[in-house]
Length: 110
Length: 119
Image (cartoon, rainbow over all chains, first blue to last red; front, side, top):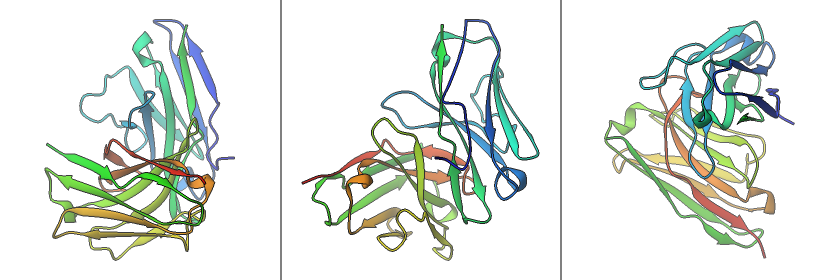
């Protein structure tokens, strides 16, 4: 059971907008930046959203991140088949003095 | 070009030890915090340890505290993870990951090395 809670699955059709949530607490999301990672089977994760809402170079602007209080969200607009992957949120936890990952969300493009 | 290459994975018996290495190139190694992150088969990502550029700040997940030791050699651009008292639940792909500024901000990852703990 992860301290950061994500829905295990999400889905959408091509062109749709999908959001993935990440819920935490005041000691983690509430007081730190949130990061989002995209992972395809058999490969290392890739940084998708940095510092809650910034896109690293090369990440399409279809991907966006937001944070409010102790929750964060990843939004994917104009969904494409190649977006089908696992998505993880991550942040630092001040109480645990460690990095936390959410349990991950498997995105299916129908 | 930034490169992180892990090595040292393999099959080990429960209670045994293993040492993972991560060779870095293409950037000033000593300027960055590094993390080890693992992923059990079919499971999610789990952070296990972090070490700052000067090794002055080291953190461990509760699941490995007292059994694993992270270290680095800035002269050799190398990161290590000494794993002792291994358990079946330590079976996973282990990734080294570079942190940009904040510990959870991993901009580069290695390809991972598989550790299997089994008799």
